Length: 107
Image (cartoon, rainbow, N blue to C red; front, side, top):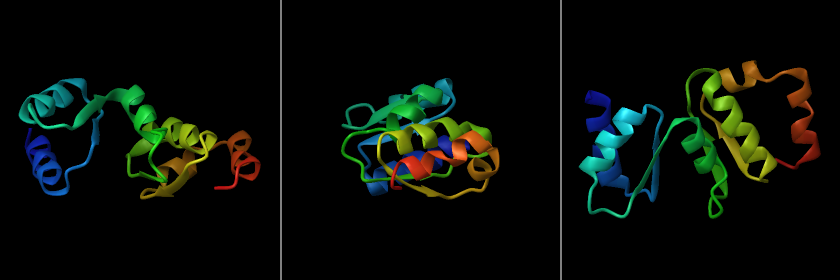
């Protein structure tokens, strides 16, 4: 709950168009807190992947802890997005097969 309150403060300050909270229950809490504002709140791995492939984003910043960030990062690369990693987990989780992916796309 405390983190959702902090996230709401950040949303109020920076006014993003899209926010993803992995936990569906917490995402619903945030959505309720932001009622009336034009901010889309998504949840889960599907929400992360949708955010990672959003059309009008030039750069995707992955700060997701653990292996959860791997799929959205790969989808962002496949969609031609530049990716900035704010963690090491995604790099560690990538298998040999995925290491060839950036050479197929200019990232």
